[in-house]
Image 1 (spheres, rainbow, N blue to C red):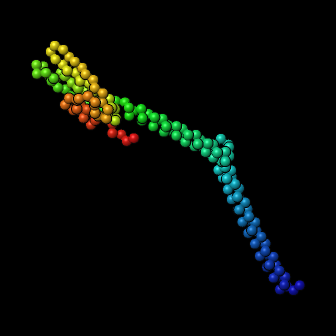
Image 2: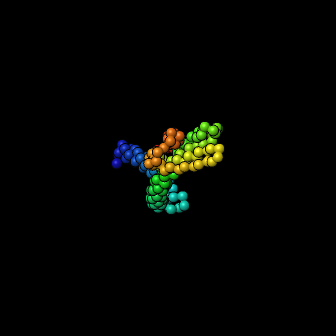
Image 3: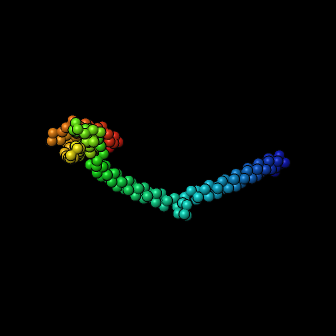
Length: 168
């Protein structure tokens, strides 16, 4: 070989060695990064108690199903409670008046006790000097099959104006 050919071969081998060393450095850097990513992946796939991510997700899905079932049961209870509450006395109206001209101080009264639909009872107590009488009349839909006095009508109207206004 000629000296020029040897110089070219030497330069080629030197360049090849530089490329080889560069590739080895890049490979070592990539290997280090791969180990870091693999470690992070293992941490991600491992749950807090040492179980893998798949088991954690399955447990969460199971917990979610249980929570949804409990929520549905609570909704049914709420609906049953709401239906029961509608039947309870929620509206009260009281009117005081003087039933007789010989008594003062509005000692007589009418009180209406109604549920949300206006069903219930109206109680009227008439106070006199010698005696006191109390009457009860059933109420359905804020009306009665019995004749109502003006005070009883006023107590019913007052009761219907009071009470809950919460949405169903």
